Image (cartoon, rainbow, N blue to C red; front, side):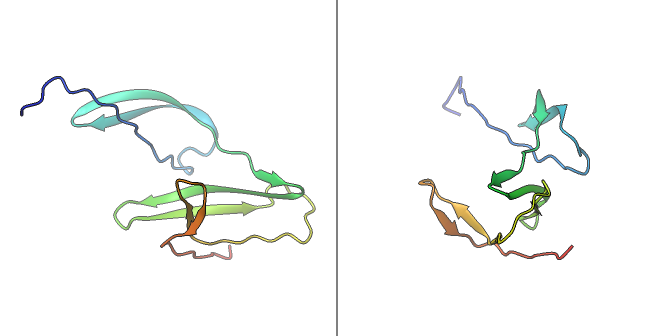
Length: 114
C-alpha cells in the first residue's frame, strides 16, 4: 500500500425498529466498521405529525429488508383526530432530487387497507 496515515470520516446511519423501541428514548448504539467498534449515545425522537390547517399526517419506516432492497413505511392519516373535511392524500413512490424537485421513483406503492 503506497498510502500511509490516511484519515477519513464516516457518517453511519442506523435503522431503529419501532417494535423494539416503541417510545422516544436514549440508546447506546454500537457501530462496527473494518473490525473496529465505536459506541454512540443517540436520542430516538419520533417526528410530530405534519399539519396544514386541519389536515395532518405522519409516517414512519417500519421494516427494512436489505436483501430484497425493500422498505415498509406506515402512514398515519389524521393522527391528531381533527375534523378535516375535503382532504386528499396522494400516495406514490417518488423521491426528491438535489434541487428539491419531486420526481417519480422506481418503487411500487402497495396500500394495505388495515
